[in-house]
Structure formats: C-alpha cells, structure tokens
Image (cartoon, rainbow, N blue to C red; front, side):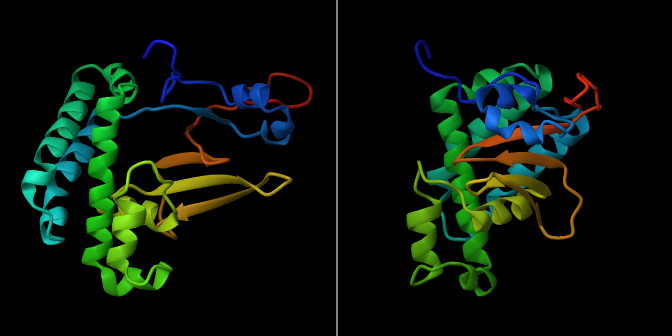
Length: 212
C-alpha cells in the first residue's frame, strides 16, 4: 500500500481529530479515543455469530458458492486476530482482504433485510425491498445508512452507539442501535466517515479541560 492512506489506523487520541479539524474543539471533553479492542471471549462470540450467519444468507436465497470463500476468509481473519491481535490492523489495511469482509457483510445485511421484508419494507424509499438491497446494500462502494447498520447490528448481535456531528454547527447527536440496548461498540460519524471510539479514562490536560 505504498503511497496510499491506511484504511484503518492505530489507536489515536481524540485530540487528533481536533488537530485535523480545530473547529471541533468543543467536543474535546469527550473522554473517548479511537480504538479497536476486543477480549478473547468477545472475539470468540463474534466468530460464532459470523459462522452462524451463513444460515441467514441461505434463507435469503443466496447460493453458497457465491459466499463460501468470502465467509472462509472472514472467519480466517477473526482466527488470526485470536492468535495475534496486531494482525487485524494489517488485514483491514489490505484492500483485497477488507473488500472480501465488506462484501460478505453487505450480503449479510441484504439477507437480514429480505428475510424480514414485512418489517423493513416500510423504511426504504425504493419500489420494493429487493430493489433496495440490490442497488443500495449489496453494491460495493456505497455508504451504509441507518437501516443497513440496524440489520448488521441485529444479525451479529452487536449493539452500537453512533455519535453524529451534524449540520453547519456540527451539533453532536447520538443514536443507539437497536433502541434501548446497551452499546458495546461506539462510533463517531462525520462527513461520510466513521471512527471507532473507546470509552477511556478521563485525563485533564489543561485548564480548559481537554480530555482523552
């Protein structure tokens, strides 16, 4: 990946965002830092959820030949992480590997939505849910909207809190998916980009009250 930016970086202090975008200084009181951190127990549970998700795709009518290699690579990446956590970063920054994982997750989101079409069809603007899944969910390179995130959250059993910096004044709003759940994954969303956030200890850095 010489000459290209990393898709996923190492753990960074939240103040890094302020250095890149000083106008966001009013959020420096958030005691969160960007991170990817999983315990062995959580990783094993996630791996099992990914393996079991195969049934979701089969139920939606996908031929196993279409996704077998995608799923195998995904599980292999998780197993490598169990043995050596640092491998996760290198795998995510390998375009081929990361595209395989994203492709599988798109198929899983599509399957989850289609298998519950009676519920989810009310949340899309396409003529029908199948068209929405083909055009907006399964197609690589498109942003995920709330409905796709909800589908993946429920399909993999991961509760998510998203902090959104929206509008001209970058007002901070948060969304918990599914509603009423206790989040295990925290994300910061701004301008078509997500940062993974980690709840850390509060550490006063200046009289103005900057934290990390």
